[in-house]
Image (cartoon, rainbow, N blue to C red):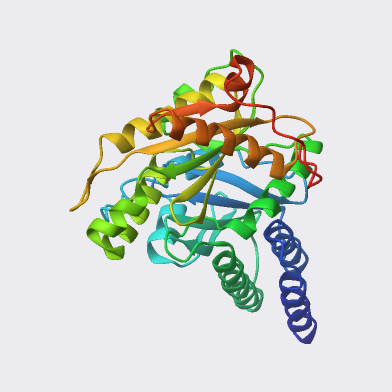
Length: 353
């Protein structure tokens, strides 16, 4: 018993000593693996709105997925906001009840570990077989992990919209650079048929940065006041979450300026994604304010690019869009080829790709 308690304390120290969420995720799985007897652990992030689940981390590395895990995950997300729960499997139960659930027949246990807006992180333990004392320690460790992740998440978010904030931008891109070097891509289990246009593969997939600026936003604040201006920002960010994919990175840099980082998509797919958002926004009726439009500048994150260079390129395309009628998507590389903009100088910043 004292040994188990000490192991639990060691696990808590290990989990909370890092401020990098990827490291914290790996640490909690490794700590649990040392604490109890099991075959392996998987950490999924479930997007309740998009009916999508992403495998975030596993331990031991290369841990095999149980053969039936896809069924558990894909059946677990549905009309959650309407409060309709079929409760056909353990994952649905734990998301609904915010409690752990064990499937003894399949030797699987599911623990909700962290909840953020429409996201639920779920730890799946394969080969689960533990006693009551170990279970109490396990629940305590996962609880501390969840609270710690909430603090880290809050520090990365814009207070008004809940999108990622400006200070998180370089850190996330640096993480992507490291992932790119090891050629690892998170597994996506996806039921959302709206995403099929992103599968266009005429070119080699890469990453794309888009800078979005709401047209005439100052006039909105001046005419309707900051309360309605803030509502526009909130609804704008909600539309971003609905239109872009769950694994794309969405930022608010401040004021009416937003940034989107599209992952693993070719040029046609990127242009389609940003144009679809522009079109969706144009057709949206904002309360009191009415119609709102957006100008967007995009650029590809090609190998050797720097973060400041990427933003500079996207900004040049954005300014071109605003100077030539607004309410449009402009591609920096297309404009450069056509002579619409001059080449953006490379800056000495984080080397990304």
